[in-house]
Image 1: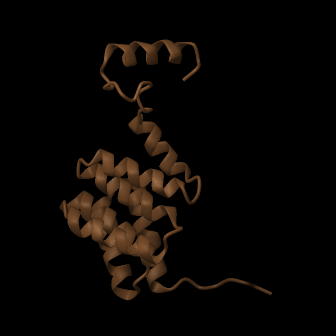
Image 2: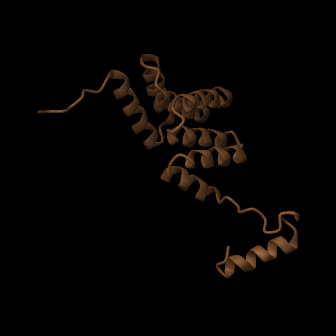
Image 3: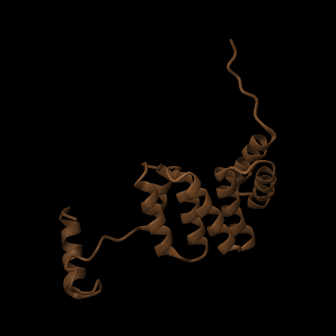
Length: 151
């Protein structure tokens, strides 16, 4: 027996959008995702639409709102955290992006989120929290411990 489930038109549009996004063609992806959302309101469709709106049109507030709604509907889907974090990065809000990526990692180890955090080179907290990060004691103590493999 064949367990093949035919894709809906919205699924086809979403798949085409993902392919366009993978090629770096954000404008085409935006068009596919818009049409997919018009046909069927799914959190994943909205999440990717939000990412494209931020990249192509600079509509950051709308993009954040769409991703937040997707997160509220599917809080354990780390793709929403990945897309929201990327939107924050595009908007120049690195701290919000890092916070969002880390929140997503609380649900599952999403390799793309881990890669984003590694690419950003997130810092560890200062060794002596009562001193500022750029204090020479913190700075050089951190360098020494890192070279010794203790940090």
